[in-house]
Image (cartoon, rainbow over all chains, first blue to last red; front, top):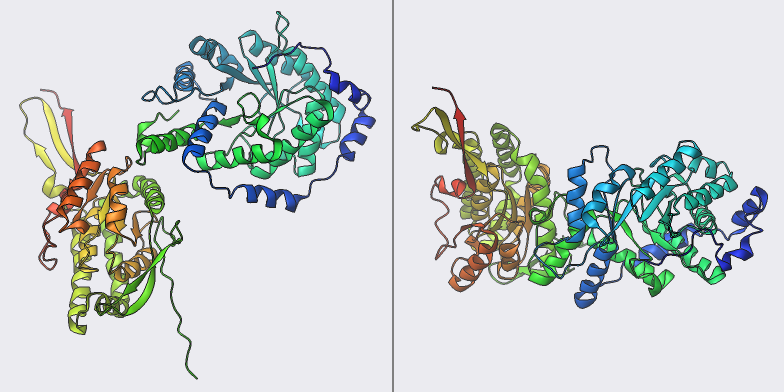
Length: 327
Length: 289
């Protein structure tokens, strides 16, 4: 995973320093973004979902999808034992097949990072949700303390939630400043920083226009990844929402030279769905994003379906859920 | 003025719904004299896959119903079938080339067979379960439990009575079934699926695929999420039956082996049809000295 210095403003972003100087200029900029054609976006997403990916291409896509999974457990009932089991699964998703790749990361609540880190070491990343996940309703000090705590425990990646209330009320600069502050809280003593993923909770943003604005806002604030949802709100990740976000990261790289990753999370349960997303990544953002460093799936049940499909390809017979661990 | 035929496009029955085959293929069904009757959906391996998923989903709730309630539901199938006698008689007459009275006899026997199995639902445990005398301070008893998802290759000749005779014993004990109907005589099975959909059988408990047992059998036999398979539909093809048994061995499926020829379906079936697809659970309960 590429790491960059913490607080240096990225060169390409300098051009936008005026935009983010005041609430008014930021609002002017975000509302000046072209609107999203809702019908067009949905039709395009549906059209890309009809591609047929078979045989060797399918095998490649399944392995890539497994490498892109952020294996997630975000339950109140998570125990140290459960997250350790999940971490072991992340290392070797299919114990019967050594050729099966590891997943990208394990995503847990901040207090369980140590447990996961003890199992994973440096082989697979640990992601922690922070900033009063999932609602984001807490004072700024608490959100930042939450973040620093997770980083201190060894989290490689921080999944933060934006304050949707502030965003929907139009207080964009407040959201911007929160992301910047959280990014600073991601800094480690050695000068590197934990990767910051910014969760929009698109199910609460109401419109695709808002998704596009939130994407630009987060990218301008220095997000390493933009992520659709917490998984706690329906609808979670959908193809059209991810399409809008992929267009945003593509346009952002054209404008600033900075590449930002995308992570749809929640509601992606089947290998077929995952492959639809991969097709869309390739067609909308380009194959630079077809890499676990730039595209992730936030999921828990998806991994088992990917493994079942993978087993089907290697053995030639349909597999069943009995042969894979539940969590 | 001549009336335009209302031609029906037959479909599969998966998870309580009537989808087209995933492959989009269908095949011509002819009557016993080779005359075109209808097009039936030609199920593919992906339909098998979908049907197994539906059957697995339905298995939990269905197997945890009381045996008494399962008996009521199977009896309800018989009731609804009785209401649609003319349609079944017509289908059997066309498919098997039987006379009107012979077809009527087949339908009678099929309905009676359902009633017979419905009665067994809450009695089987009393016959094959047991309180075992053991040398120790235990109350030890054995109870039958359903095996799980059962693949059924339905008989090729007896399109209605044979079908009912292999499906009813599987579901009455609490299993869910993925059935591949007779290839050349699928229409009674299609009508039977409409009966299932309008009786009280939960979606997914019985899934009926019209298609070729020789093509679908290997996928069903090798499927790791199928717990048992009835090979009746490949009776008379010993080599195919053997290869299916080999494929089924991978996850230790229970296999009801293919007979050399189709049995006389009119005969009373006996309990073996049901006990082939149950597991015996034995409980050792300490009772003190």
